[in-house]
Image (cartoon, rainbow, N blue to C red; front, side):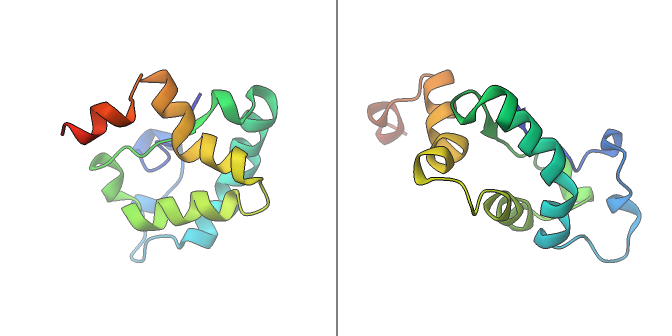
Length: 103
């Protein structure tokens, strides 16, 4: 399950209408109930964080979004965090270290 895309206009949040974009703390608080539910149901080995940039730029910042993900997972184990931020995507998209070094 891809966890992200919350900055699109379809997400239902009004972040794109605000003069000041949300902070990572605010994003984490808003997303926590939804993302934690998904992670609890599917497990960290079947979920991954993603951004929908540049589309999300209209609502929040790239660094702010990834910092919110870090805040959401601050109490997770190292293995769970590794899965959510990297390992699940690498496995699902079949990205090996050898492929990354060829870029």
